[in-house]
Length: 250
Length: 225
Image (tube, chains in turn orange, green):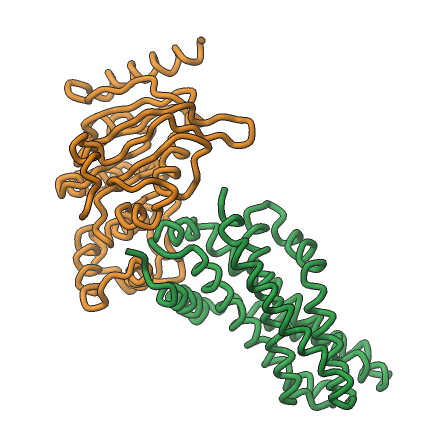
């Protein structure tokens, strides 16, 4: 893919500069500067209302910034949103699937929206359904799937167009232990394929185990930003508590 | 880089029809409402033949309008409730393609119900409604109503009181379409000379074009947060 050479040399695939997002008079993100390099797996943590989902929606082009700049792969948002959207796959706590369509029909619909070559679509869908362990349920309506199966299909949808960037907004919501561990495996595989992943979550253990870097958002800014090397869930939990309580004590 | 506009529109229409064929939620609920409505009107007007003849176009449009509102709410709620609108907005398509795709789907479902109504009303009200001019007015009126309805439903579906809010915001905006459609239909059914009422379908065409252009221009703002 053609990337802006300046950003390539600076090595940021995703970059926000002085990013501000406010809903009316309520600021959610306050002059946020964040850079994510190609291939990184970043866990974005923070209490409810700290701006995690807002940041992901801004990066996905689903929302427009109040001020500041976002560049992804050299393209600027919101001006070049269509180019950016082609590089992004998003998984949300909502599954973003049609309940009355089967797994295959859902993926075919999104394949058409992403303009995938018709000759390759069925092969790609079969590969992905195999990868997420749903190859035996391809013709079943999504409404008959468990929450975990729906979330796996949601990941298949997000990977359908082979995006460079995966944005995951609390993907563990509503998943039981088994489904969460299946999701862990899928995210590891997606990262191993070289994708850049930004995931918001409240699951500190998963964040420490999967991500290479943790960013804790608080009060619309970055309260903590460091690699996860040497961190386990309990240590990260202590850092998280310290960072967020420090902010709320201010 | 972008998916071709027409391909995106057709994909959305195809998906809506596929879901409807699978679930039969929209057309069945719209159709049942419409059938119930024309039956009630038929009983109410049974004894007064002249009143029935005069009221028939009103009955037709009241039924089509409220059945369409029912369908619009459900059609857009399907996109909102599971976050599917976000999934479509994430795709590299022209965002207006979503509007045209949903409009085409809503129009198809409303027309199916409208076309089912005509033969049933012909029998119940003992008046031939299967007339080419009436079919044209039905098409034009339904198109205008579906156009403005799709845009407004996209807005109201985000609110808690969406079921009651849509008719409230829609009626004043859709009034020119309804006025022209009812007047044209009444004249067609009372066999008034064409020169006396041809202006109404012409007004419908103009209003439809104005609505289509306005909705095209406004849609991006409507779906923004």
